[in-house]
Image 1 (cartoon, rainbow, N blue to C red):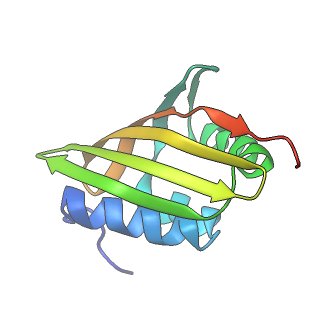
Image 2: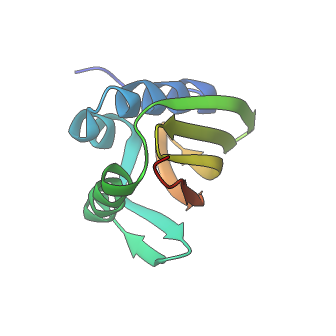
Length: 121
């Protein structure tokens, strides 16, 4: 079994983004999220892997699936990403997630974005 607890903040963040953009939520949870992770969004606060699954389903239902990450920052156990997602008819231009990573696992994540929908021409 691979020891994931010694990974750097950068390693965990990159692994999370790789698995999430590939749609592999369960492997992402197992490798990168603490069982008692705290997730905060404007829609509320939840804890645990089930919270991550719930928020992921919300994202999949509403947010385009083609992500770009204009900014990725890390400092010690903290990480931040700026993200965009676009497809015809809708986009997110202001996605921003913050993370706290300890012992190779995400223990906290905040998620913010605004979905913009355009009317068909």
